[in-house]
Length: 303
Image 1: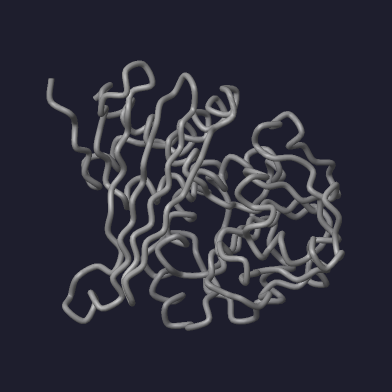
Image 2 (image 1 turned 90 degrees about the horizontal axis):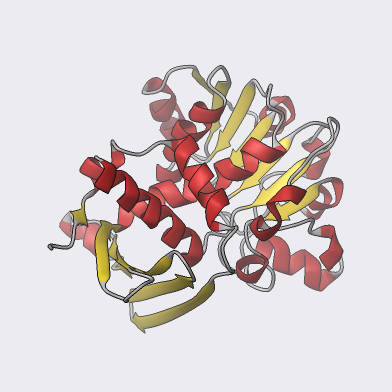
């Protein structure tokens, strides 16, 4: 039997955001994932592999190659793929396009939290960052909040305008503080190392979704935002001690470890009261790639 190779376009049209979040929730009822990363570097190029094994679900190795000089030759800077393996006998189950797995894992990770932590009647959603992830967030949040109005803010306004022109029910924000204060949900996917979103802008009842910071030196919100919020993460193992959004304020004593309410291995704790400000840190992680790729393969086989 041949091993399926699932490309982006063919796989993308088979998937459903609500179905994916249900699959992610189910994945967290299984034994806790074992994860491991390897990082190889040849200036200026990088090879990053992230592996996960979940008993009962299988194994995945997601590999990314980052070649910064590629765009000058009209080639993508980031490439890669995911090898998915059987939990029963270790055989190769599928090879899945890197960008397909990343798109659905990243936005789906945030959407699972929003379905539990945002007010169900949320009507205004602000996307901070008009990049590839921002576009995926529009698709994901539309699935769970179909009547919501969207606003997009980006450092380069022209990119925000281009995104808004190609999507229904989206306007451009020029004042970030005002846009944050007005939104029921704020979802941020930027490369910022200094906080963009300030706690003084927040109001009771909001849900804040943070995606962009992935290095120890990166943050998207300030200390006040964390202190005013009930903070949740997708995984303690991949955020605490690793990502600046959580690592920096913990080490500075701005917040304490018990300020972090829960991760996805305690999904029942993902609850809110009407006036809560909830904040979710999306850290990613190979275990989420594994859950996502198993969902992708299931949909592929069903089709």
